[in-house]
Length: 355
Image (tube, rainbow, N blue to C red; front, side, top):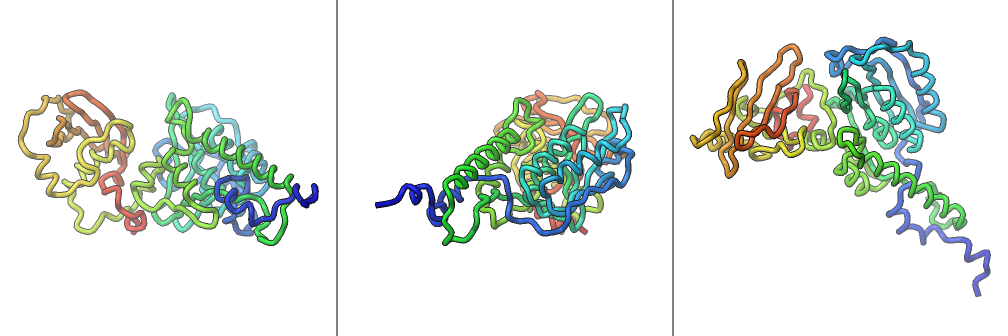
């Protein structure tokens, strides 16, 4: 007969399945480096400086209880800002730590219009990556994500671990199991809240990224590895000194730019996802297209296929951006400013972009 006290205790071995299914409030991929937040400049950046790689703040070390309070103190020490066209950018280099603190830091980043950046040779993973995804900036009457990753930086996600001893021979009190379960539900709610909102523009964690997080065990890491990852999860790639693929064909790149617009604007996908020289030759096949009035200095491309699809783009040297429009049957279906990284195929590994 099992004693009542024994019924209130589970061996850790019986919790393995639960551990695979639940999330909790700690992560298991952190180092012992002391958490630090440094103010490098109390002057916010102009809009044109945002993707220059300049940082106004620097976050590093293991995220622990109290880290968010340090970030809050750093923000409160800044002089008051009376403009809406300048923003701060925080560089991040941390292997993670306490996930709840990561959310709190992310909330501070979001509410105070901080962009986020993982610079060259830095890594931001686990709780740090959650905070990173809260990078948003205000540009006059617009509010947009600004989360930038250097091709030689690392940004990693995984499912957090249960805060229970890993000693498989240890019996775990029911109260501890219930506490872990309660923490798991709260964490799931936080992540889902970040993935689903009334306005897709303010989703911190795109659903595709959430799916990858839940698929990745706590002792593994899902890094942002390709342009497809970055485009899909709304992460900007540091645009300076990029290296074009070997035998890069600029004409193919222009068509790829147009095909990649669908990543930036929902419903604006035209042409094939991966553009080749053979497809370009096919796209240029003469057919019937609705005449479009071309802007001065803009190029008009036609995509042969079942639908009448066209792309209209121009390059703004001062912004170092392409102004890209997509049309279907003469009707505009999308427009966005894209940097030069969108000239490349989405399958391209990020490390191949860095010089």
